[in-house]
Image 1 (tube, rainbow over the protein chains, first blue to last red):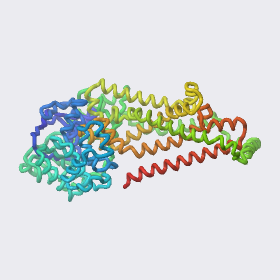
Image 2 (tube, each protein chain N blue to C red; image 1 turned 120 degrees about the vertical axis):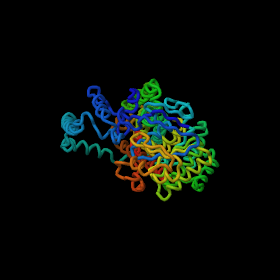
Image 3 (cartoon, rainbow over the protein chains, first blue to last red; image 1 turned 180 degrees about the vertical axis):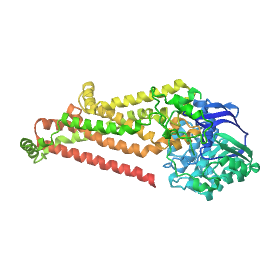
Image 4 (tube, each protein chain N blue to C red; image 1 turned 135 degrees about the horizontal axis):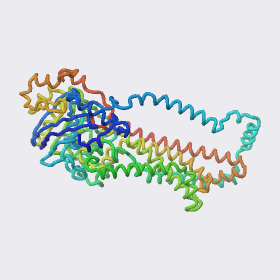
Length: 271
Length: 334
C-alpha cells in the first residue's frame, strides 16, 4: 500500500522531523507507531495522508508516486486515505450529520454539497455509520454538545462514510478518557477488519499498541528504532525508544495527555 | 536540504512566515550550527524559541516605539491646535448657547414632518442596498484576501510546493485582492458619493454605490481576518478527505466563521444608516439632503428634529441587529 524510500521532512531548512525513513506497509495490514512526543509520528502521518509533501525521498501509495501530486489528482488520492485526528477536527457548530457526511465531500458534486447543508443528502448513510460506532441517536445533535469520546466516534463515522482504503489514526485516544481509549482502539481495529482497510495508528500508549496490533514500529528522532511483531518487542526495545524522556514508560498516558493545544496553521512539530 | 523546501516551510511558531532579511544572513549562520552537530537529541525544536539573529532587536523596540509615540503625540497636540479652553471662553460660550437655544423648540409642524417620510425611507433603503452590495463585492474579494485560503498554511502547503508558477499566481491574487480592498477603503464614502453623483446623477443610487464600494473594502478586510483566525484543524481534516477548497469553505470555514461574519455585517449596516444620512450632503438622497438644506438655512429647530430622527433610526437598527445576533449566537449554544 505504502512504500517509503528514504523519506525526509525538514522544516525551515534545518529542523529534521523525519530522517531518511524507509517503510513498507502492505494492503490490509494493521500497525501501530509508538515513540516520544516529537519523534516525528505526526509529521510522518501528515505526509502519508498527503497534507504535507516530503522534503526528499520517494513516497509511493499503491505504486503511485504521491510526493509531488497536485490539483485534482492529489484530491483523488486523498479520497482513498482516511484520517482520524487526535483533536477530532470536527466543526463544532454543525450538526453531527453534516460532520459525518463531510466525509463524502470529495466525492460529491458541488451542488449536492450545497444542498446537503440545507437538507442532508444521504442521512441514511450517516445514520448507518453512526450505528457502526455506537451513537446513532446523536444524528441531529449539535456536534459541540457531544463528549470527547463521542466526538471521536463521529470523526470515525466521517471516515467510514468516506470509505477509504487506508485509515490513518493519529493518536485517536489521547484526548479521550483513558477508560474509553481501549474501546475506541478496538472499534477502529474491528471496523478496518470488517471493511478490509489498512490501518496505521499513532499511539502514546505502548500497552494499547502491544495488545492490539500485530506489527509495532518504534519511532525515535525521525527514524525507525524498531519494526517488529508485537510479540517480539522487548523491554530493551522500549527502553531505547523512550530513553531520555521524562516519562520513562508510556504508562502515564493520561497524565501526559496534553491540554488542548492552540491550533495553528503550522505543521505540528511536536505532539 | 533542497532549496525548494525552504520556500514553503520558512515559517515561525504561529505559521507566519519568518522574514529573512537579506542583509542579516540568518540562513548562512544557523544551519551550520544546527546541522553541523550530530543529529540533535530532540530534532524537532520549534524554531521560534531560538532567535539566531537580531536577538537584541526585540528588546529595544518598545523603547524606540514609546519615544516616537510620545514625540508624535506632543507634536500633534501643537500642530492640531488643540486648545480646550477655547470652548469655554466668553465668545465660544455665547455661540454655543445661541446654537443650542436656537434648536428649541424643535420643529414638529406637520408641514415639515410630512416632508420627511420619503427621505427617511430612502435613507433606510440606501443603507440596506448599500450593505447588500458591500457584502456581494466584499465577500468574494475577502476570500481572495484570506492568506490561509490563498497561499499560507496547511491548505496550501502541497499545492505551493508542487508548482512555482501557481504559487506565484496565488500570492499575486492575494496581494491584488488586498490592494483593491484598501483602495476601496482609503477613499472615504463621502468622496465616493461625490464621484458617483457626477457619474449617475443626483438621487439615492449614487449613495448606494458609495456605501457599497467603501463598505466592501471594510467588510472584505474584516471577513478575511475572521476567516484567517478560524480553527484550521477541521479544515485540514476536510482537505484530507479529498474535498476541494470551495467545499472546505462551505463545510469548514463558513460554519465556524458565520457568527462573527453576521455580527460584523450587521454592525456595518448600522454604520451605513449613519453614513447614508451624511451622503445626502453631496446630493445622494436620503435624510441628509434635508439636513443640509435646514443647516444652510440656519433653521436649527429643523436640524434638531432631523438629528433626533436619525438617532431613533440608528438605535432601531442597533436593536434589530442585536436581536438577529442573539438569534444566531443562541442557536449556536443549544
